[in-house]
Image (cartoon, rainbow, N blue to C red; front, top):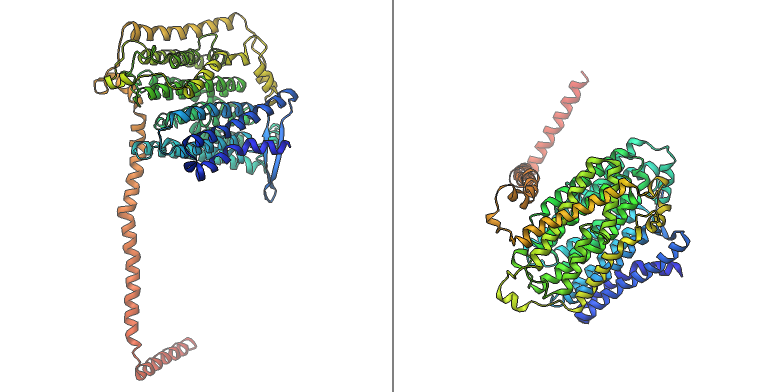
Length: 628
């Protein structure tokens, strides 16, 4: 019975994908949307069922489906592992995924390919479930590549726009770069231990007999894979471009699925990274720098979804900072709260875009607070959460990261604190430009402004409530439910409770003050001062550099893309024709010699006898001279 329920949890979204692919168009838009939503909701219900079971017993549920690989001494089963970590991920992947599916029924209702959209969404969730529940790294890699494929399909869903196609290809290719590192790490671990099963790997690695140098290389390669999937420096530029897809896709990628895969992988393999402090230091530094760089870019973006995209990159950087400091439970905490408020923010932005007839530039918005009160209030709650204002969920998780950073590495704490202040500034900049002052759009847009329908606002309300109360799962009072729940996964050093003293309360006050400073600066400039950002052509100075994302994409284009294109052009236009002429010349020579030879084959018996005599004489003379 248990095995069957596990299979239903895993396969329900895949069945929804198949049904919508083959029958969705005939069934109609409403049925396609309902089927896709029910499929993911079913997985969510079963995730809750297994979560309650594991939370009560503290015993993981392991199901072996079949023998998979057996080569020499390397053996691997295809199994499912439902433990504390995988079930936490399942709850927000399927829970928030269900809300996004429900939201999409209304948001995508006018799209002619709505059935295809829901089939892709279902496939996305299926691969993310596969990534999370596999009992070994190879099954994780199947899901890892699957979500990469689905991101390509969904980012480029409106394929008639070439820019969207380019964004989809960029996401796919940049992830392949990271995935090469991931694969190398998998090969190293497989060759060292003849297994990729999590339990067997943990036993072998913690035994202390492994080559530390090889473990370090493997961990570094795995982290390279995480930088691609979870958009860290230098492989982060695909994520803002992923905004090309429909807004529900952005919410699914940024909040619940793909970008959290890197954090999940490192947390799952915490026993490996604990033994490679060099790699942990790299993770912490890359995370902190990514958080700061992405936050600074978000300060001047005017596309509402681009602001949220860079905030995702920045928040992921904070999660990697926690991972690098060994605070895996803190990183997981921020993953969960971030899933709540970021999904709310993206779906809220979609509600605004829906009302604005697909306008995404905040310079063309304003005054929407009274017209869209539900969207405004839910986004305000999520914005307070991401800004780290108590008692909203983001305050608790972000404060844990900052507190951990202060105790481990003060320079990294300073960097993370600056990123947090910037976050509060650009998020309230978004709120003030979008919802306050007078409307700055066209008269036609103003005439059609309205609050979004219930299928859009209901998920927003649910996510806003979670953004408000989500921090309760890990209160900083020495009684964190989350830390106790995750304790079996980590060593003793990683689930010790923070004991709050003067230093901790001071750090908490500094973090809140930083958030309030960011909010105050935004208020003074955009609400009190009424400042509206300049048009693109009028931006100059360093602001232009920041607005153009430090020209990182242009640098990649100049240093990587153009040289590779030049090399490929050289091969195509110079080397390949030269080789073709050489091969063709050799063929022509052979044909010419054959043509000359064919003239001898003219049917003249006398000529044949003459050639025979000449040949025989030559052989006779050679043998005579050789024996002399």
